[in-house]
Length: 147
Image 1 (cartoon, rainbow, N blue to C red):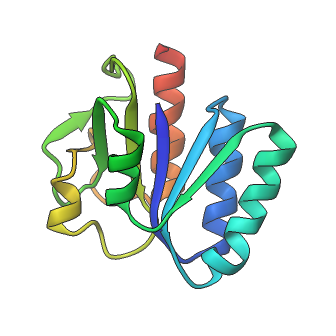
Image 2: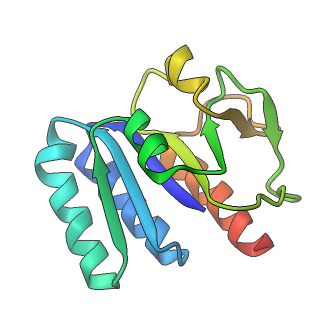
């Protein structure tokens, strides 16, 4: 399972995602399409966190690059707007092989083209978008526990 934070401009969001991912025991975080403050200060901060924790941080220009270079067996796109499958954190599915799970780092949601790069999922019973850190907390923890 490889978490991906896509399309992010917030320094705080990048560092929060790095802390979350590494604290849950995931070895790698991928950040794609970082711009503004995220690119200037968020990536250096996430790199510092990764080095301190002995983990990996991969920074790529776009989501296409992550899918192409990491060659996942499955890509999950966390999106409420384009959801095709409900994700039940109390009974998470078991995914085989290398799985990318992509969280949208800013507003608006994924484009239609981005949503079609994988299987669009969203949390069952959630009526609005929670934001990437909350979504990642719930999904990544439940997958880790199922693990």
